[in-house]
Image 1 (tube, helix red, strand yellow):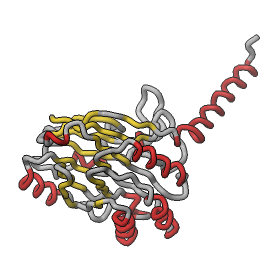
Image 2 (cartoon, rainbow, N blue to C red):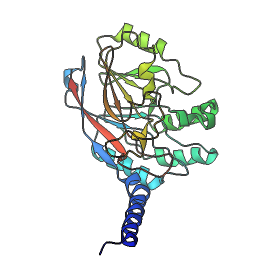
Image 3 (cartoon, rainbow, N blue to C red):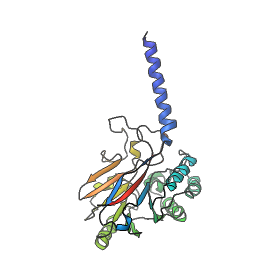
Image 4 (spheres, helix red, strand yellow):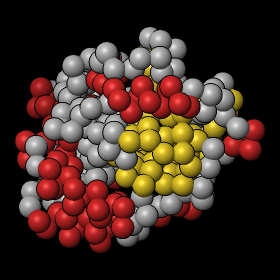
Amino acid sequence: MTTRRNVLKSLFAAAALTGLYTWRWEPHWLEFTYPTLPIRGLPENLHGRTLAQITDTHIGPLVDDNYVVESFRRTQEQSPDFVVFTGDWITYRGEAQLDQLRRVVAHFPHGRLGTVGILGNHDYGRGWRRHEVADEVSRIASDAGVKLLRNQATEIGGLHFVGLDDFWGPNFNPAPVLAESVARNSSLATLVLCHNPDVADEPVWGNYEGWMLCGHTHGGQCKPPFLPPPELPVRNKRYTAGKFGLSGNRNMYISRGVGHIWRVRFNARPEVTLFELTAA
C-alpha cells in the first residue's frame, strides 16, 4: 500500500543515491570522445592523425592525484600524434600545489609529433593576477616536455598552433599573435588554443578562419537533463561543451575537462577529447 511515509522514503533514498553518484562516481568517470576535426590546409601526411585535448586537471587539494595520473596513462595508451592542454593545470592554494604539479605532470602524456599547452585563470593563483605563480606553472609544464605558449605561436609537424594567454589573467593580448599568424601563415593548417570560450566573441580575430579549442566550463559540472546548467563561468551561456559554429568561418570545441573545482558532477562527465584530423 502506498503511503505518504513510503513515498517520502523513496524520494529520500533516490536523493541520497543521486548525491552519492554526483560526489563519488561521476567526477572520476572519465569519458573519451572521438570527434573529427576538419582543418583547412591540412597536409596530406596528417590526414587521419590524432590530437588529444586535455584540459582543466585542477591539480590541487580537491582532485585526486591518482585519478589524474590514470587519466594521463589512459590517454598515452591511445598513442596520440599531438597532445594539447588548454589551461587550468592547478587549483592554487599555496606552494604545495606547485610541488603537487611537479609530481603529477611527470606522467603527462606526449604526442608522437608534438605536445603543446597554455595557461588558464587558475594558473595565475588567487584573483587570477599572480604572475609568479603562472611563471612557475609554465616552467614546470615546460620541464615536463610541454611547449607552453603565452600569446605565442609555433609550428610542429605541419600544424601551426597559436596559444592565447588566459582571458581573465593579466597577460591577455591575443591580437598581435593572431594577426601575425594569419598574415604570415594564412595557408598553413592552424589551431588556436584558448582556455576561456568567451574570447570567441571578442573583436580580436581579424581574418582568422579555423578552429579554437577551449576548456574552462567543465560542461557546467552539474547539468539537469534537457536544461542548461545553473552555473556556467562564461558570459555567453550558449558555450557549455562540445562543438559550436562561430561567425567568420570559425569553429570551436569546448572540452568538459578532467578535473573539478568542487567534487560534484552530474550529466557532465569528465572528458578527454581524441580528435581525428581531416581536411576541411
